[in-house]
Image (tube, rainbow, N blue to C red; front, side, top):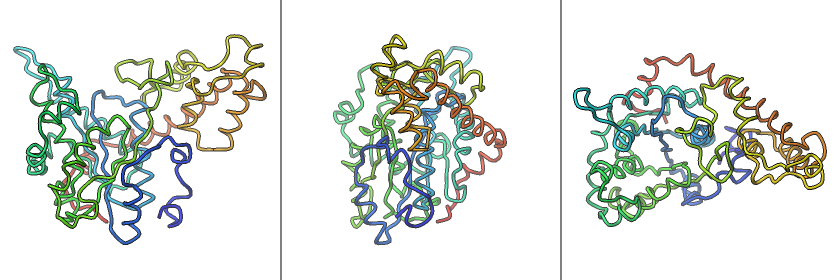
Length: 364
């Protein structure tokens, strides 16, 4: 369905390495595709900062591969409304900062476009702009989900504002093709595939439970969106956590200079190496704890080189026996990757972003 069709050279290394590690209904979706039932991709971004970090890029890089591999349309939701509901501010005299998040949508869209999506097949939309098109489905979702279900799934409390309580329906609505009458050409039986981090699964579990109420009776998946889940991209300080845009030293940003990238990796990347050179030579590093090695699993495409580095580092022998050498290899990879991204992004204007966000029929 992918490599065999000649659209991509090989299976994505995040699939080969179990970074995308679980799914809901992918097998069924692939069987349907073999029978000629197409699908569309849906992913998104909550624009909380002007500069995105490498962790934010993971779903988009993988979605880009999926679009290439399956040759399918894609919708990208920019949840500027969500970020205002959770982080927005109001000051007497100055008013609120809702449009600040709309501005961040425009800036983040440039980073997303720079990933290399097919413009003819991709629709990027701000909730603030597009929500009217989705509103009938949002109302149907509100009607279908009890407040007890929402509270249990999303942890709402008495202090949550009513917009937060209502928002899950806005994130669920793009799972249904009838939310995109123009972009998807009134094809209400299209299936939907959502690549996302594992923490997004609760949103879509609830969506899947009520999906049959929003689609024709003969929808191939009963309206349920298929999901494929990624593991968290670890922060610099330790492989078990989640990267945070609010902690600058937990992340490498797409705006970082080569010097900043080197400084962050060498100074802050948590090491799984031993305390002394003697001990490292004897026991080798703990690869599960070592952030530089874990990041190489994400960004170094060459399986043989990764295996060579892992073997050397975990045994304390060979060219990559110590932490410094592994970190330097990661620095080299990230400097090249981020630099190439910055070059592509610099060419994208506000006018081009508006073209990607224009409500139009996608070509598929």
